[in-house]
Length: 238
Image (cartoon, rainbow, N blue to C red):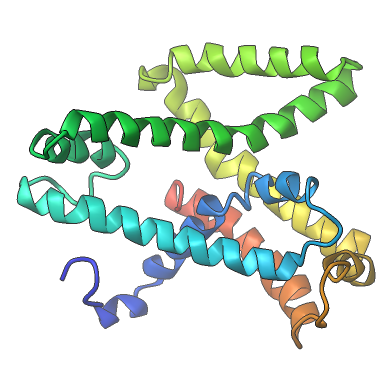
């Protein structure tokens, strides 16, 4: 019931839409320009619009699967379902403890979480490493090592929130969403629709959907700007 019975009145609450928009931006790594980094490695034969739609679909499916694994156990153990990401480290270990061969499944599960985190981190480090290479004239290996060292140093203090909490708020509320807006403006207004549409249809047999120009140039760009404004107003969204 908690997961799948909708409360339609929540659609009349603007906060529902604001948080959903923020979740979409951060979950799909739009704000961190992660999709741009992944896109730079794509083959010229790749159907980018199809891959984009599939990414959104599979991301939603993965979230639903995770919810079905975590939320029932939350209620079974009397935990707070709104506790957020820590639920994965509080709830699932209790589930594994009651399963046959639970320790084995726990090891496999958290190894999967580790690899998921590392692979997600790659696109973030790629952006910073490229910037270090360009700004300081370093080779790729020294740039990656320098970036990794800085991230590792921050990670040492990540558990002590007073050291990193304010800094992380600045990154996620201001810097990263502003980067998404700049990326959107550069792609659809500076580079221009003809150039980006040529790239999007390089490996695609069908034309882009009707209305793409309007949605991309006006709806998406201004939604990205809204993420910045609403993120500041709400103290973070998503």
